[in-house]
Image 1 (tube, rainbow, N blue to C red):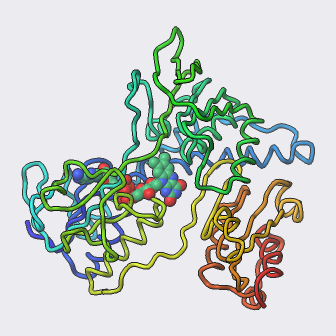
Image 2 (image 1 turned 90 degrees about the horizontal axis):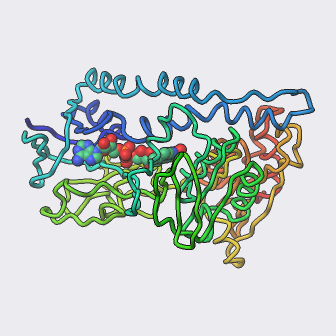
Length: 447
Ligand SMILES: Cc1cc2nc3c(=O)[nH]c(=O)nc-3n(C[C@H](O)[C@H](O)[C@H](O)COP(=O)(O)OP(=O)(O)OC[C@H]3O[C@@H](n4cnc5c(N)ncnc54)[C@H](O)[C@@H]3O)c2cc1C
């Protein structure tokens, strides 16, 4: 079978390009060995956010206790999980159907490159002018005794019942998002982290604020602790560390990072360089073999490994195959920790700005206090804004329930190099939470 383009993997890194290219008259195939749609759709962002809604509501209702709300309902995890299945399970078959309607061939199985133009799946050969590698990442699992008792994020997002006692190994984004859910349900939660801090790349002030909030909800944080074994106990499991810490628990989740899926796809024989961090590419996302591109999480790159970045790369590769010769140019990329509240960041980090006072100025906006009623009594909501020496917004860090939405607005202001006059030429809906922040921001931007 001959194609113009074969995509390996069916996640966001590939299918946006597949649709564009097929619609532009190319003959496209996608090879997938698991559920169509990849991690985000089936086991990541979408699955997580389908579970998140009631936790957000409970968080907000708690703020109105004694101010109109008497009783805050508890979350029925099992019913919520059923809802998640209702929402998420149809996505893969729906995408399969849409690909079929568009004329994109879906090949099921594990793909391997045998030369620059040939992909083999289950012993069958397919040839193509271009190949896009979008094989993504998988959880990094600890190699310790009892590793078989450690679950990954995919399993947590499928849990039929929320355990009473949970231990999270790692204090990164995934661990804290899930710990935040379990804590909100009043469960006994431990977070064990090898390094000295949680969420290493995020604004330390907001990480400390979140950590304090989670600690107040009963989460036990253990830093500088290396888990060395998980063993079966009379009831549940025992997690132990090198320093002698011992935690009895019902469920252990390993969230110690993710590694790129670069093995067994034929990279070495073609001279395509890769490591656990991913595949090496040039400024056009080409591997060492020019007609073979890499896209999404499987690229070794400085940008955050997130869905919108994978989509951006997917769209870029489609444009290159259709004739674009410009190198890829990434705008600023927002990152969000979907805890209650969110920590959201974009652009120049607060840590970088504070270490280069000649280049940048930071300004704290305690908008939760300043806009108390618009912000639904979230008194701790706050943003730290980073301005360059001309006064333009170049970075932002937000701690707020709606930090995930607010950061998008701030991202547009950064990318658009907005002045105060540009903001003031627009009329925004009032009373709304964002308009208050925009008003405060207008006073800080150059005229
Ligand atoms: C729990 C969790 C929560 C997340 N939350 C967010 C979030 O809130 N926001 C956000 O932006 N990002 C989030 N992410 C990250 C996001 O899911 C990824 O950035 C995104 O899925 C990357 O897309 P991709 O197409 O590169 O890889 P994937 O979606 O992982 O797709 C790769 C596909 O390739 C297939 N594959 C691999 N090898 C082969 C082979 N040899 N042959 C055939 N098929 C193969 C795999 O089965 C898989 O389906 C989250 C991730 C996780 C795990």
